Image (cartoon, rainbow, N blue to C red; front, side, top):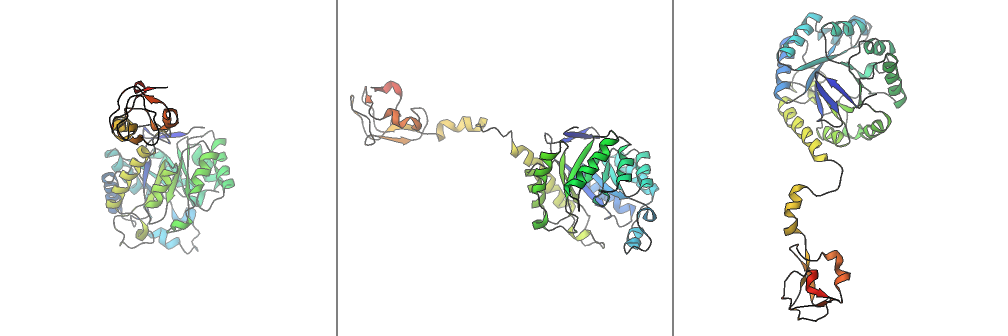
Length: 337
């Protein structure tokens, strides 16, 4: 097992900047021109990858399903996905997809996607997960609607096929997911339980949730993305637009730097500022030679450079060995027992 995966030579894990996936989903509305524009804008917005959904409606839905016509109307053909893949490759940008059925998984493997996404709806789809795991490519698994036991089962199916290139995404499969339902502490639980990269798949409107997720240790953020919230379709209204995505990707990268090393020690800037900021024991009034030091004649003031205030008790009752002028910093060589 590994605590990082590699997608298109980019390392993904807790030691690296968050990997941001622009989730195009079905927000292309079945139009390849819009899909290409989404690739362009994702690149401009600082995303690391764009992710689509690839399927044959007849393969993953019964024709009596209330959703069949919707999915059929926005379905892109395999030839169109191949064109999109090539378009992204020309721009040196990572393109991948979530296959909803085995023929789509095989097709994506044929066009050599660098990784696979397992949608939350397929968390318990053992045949599909094992089929994809055999392809020995990284697998990013969303866990919406799932229990921790079901997540473990999905992981074990991958491991049975000798594929440990796994990343797990906490997810709440509600559209949109409300901030109060996100249960981000699951990220912490997953980090304790698994040695794989852990991330968050965001189906909500709030960008604060993504910032909080990364602060808790998520190293992947996937967020629904649209060119325009006003487009027709069920997911556009809660998806992020390019201008906001650009700001978010910048903020998420900054969080990694903000988290630091975890060691409580002064920075280089603090060290340079320390003499002016820290305080010393100083003379409250003129202290004649031989006089005992007490609360009546000493105080604590900036700058640093003399005896530290934490040694106050050691200074009390010592005597001055010379005249110490008011506001002078007191050093040990100014004192005698």
